[in-house]
Amino acid sequence: MVQFPAEKSEILTKRICTKKIAGLVLAAALLCESLAAQYSTKIDVLKGEQWWGVFVGGEQAMPLSEPFPQTDLSTWVKSNVAPLLISSRGRYIWSKSPFKIEYTGTEFRIESPIEEVEAVTGGKTLREAYLVCCHKNFPPAENAPTPAAEFFTAPVYDMSAEIPFSATADDIRQYAQNILAAGYPAGTLVVPGGWQSTIGSFTPNLEMYGDFAASSANCTTKDSGSC
Image 1 (spheres, helix red, strand yellow):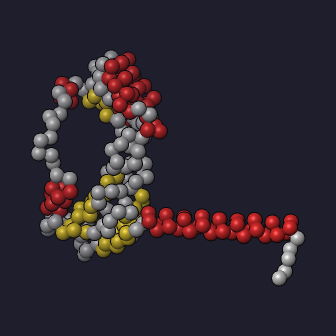
Image 2 (image 1 turned 180 degrees about the vertical axis):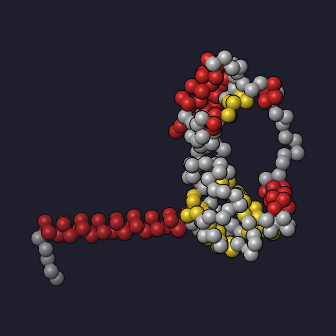
Image 3 (image 1 turned 90 degrees about the vertical axis):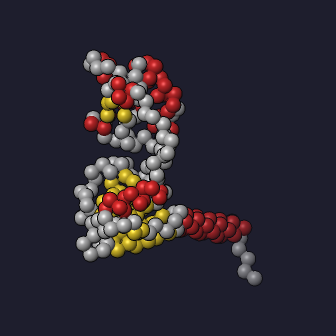
């Protein structure tokens, strides 16, 4: 048996431990990547078929014609997006959770962490595809509450004309103050996209707004309007 001096033995032990740790970190990273893209799907575009969807804010011309690289809908911040596509041939693509999507011009490549996303035939036309998808996956509420009277009796101010995305709490307060300072009546202030923690979660981003409910209440009380 070969014996090393104590100092050299200690160095070899540290090197072995370092390699083991590096191996474990790499294995964990690969496992996370595998779990994050657990379901992969390729959906071919049919002959003469046109598709609408994913990008809500004009990021892509509709119907989709130009290919676009893989886009993660859960982290996309350039515009509003939705995990929904509908086609002129009566098909639709939908998921209850944001997915990653790439369009090559001839097929959609979709990666989802929760389910296998497929193209479903809902009819023969764009309208039929949307209606079937809507009533199956996000139907209108039967007992939906009546919109607040302020939506019809007072102005509704849309911030997106000046701040298209990710308005901060200070931006919102300043916008409301500027409206009142200019002599306009108090009303409802529509916060632009980017306020959610992730696209589609409908949960306020706490890092941007802190206590969102308190900020909204303060804005309403202070400015005698709503935001």
